Length: 340
Image (cartoon, rainbow, N blue to C red; front, side, top):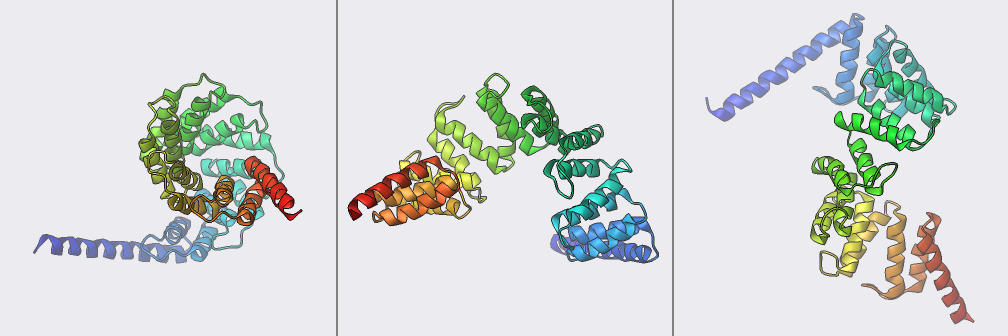
């Protein structure tokens, strides 16, 4: 038997074993075994060995949840919160999270914190959100570390305290939370409550950037573009921007447009700049909309057209871009003078 034939045989055996296991879980679930009902719900939710089916996942989780399985209660709450297999219903989500949290399930405690912080299914209550996050953090739940850091950074129910925020973000980062890495990088890069330290910022950005996180890649690109803690290197900046932009990250798509329109790290290429700007603009990026307006206003790679420039400046202005507001006023005054 060839190596390929052996691999195919092993694959068949694995598939057969999975099918047998699913059959056993179905049989046990039909008999009312709560653990089997939960496992079957997980199989349907994740599409493991069966076609993904959120409706069936809801049905199975509900059977298990009503028998007191804490994780089934949490998963059911999550499906109601996200509107998967059911109509989105924050009140139902809250109720199931509360049942799960009453049994001390950390994921549910953290989910309740989110619900109270964001006023989903209940009135906004930062104090209760903080309490729930701390209960989850006491069980070493990584997301709770991140949420607590965010609460202290954004003074949600507590005094703004970057020292505390850094403490919680570092715990989250050590548990692999990429957003915590990015927030720590931003805090050190901008000296928010700590001594400005580009070396620390670079250290926190590098790991998630290498793992493909587009926000970290964008921020690394900014540091190389401006020479923050590293020698200025537009080619390296362009490399990181491109990695993030390829993932559809609007801010990085804008930066790609800017690099091409200004000839930084690459030969000036207005059509290519416009292509990137438009990709970012399609996602509502105000700065990209403003730059498209600028290109039409000044005829960069396109025929000069104040009317089209004004369209894009208006779109950017509605999103709060101050430069678009100023440029719009200049064009309107110019068009008014010509009309007179």
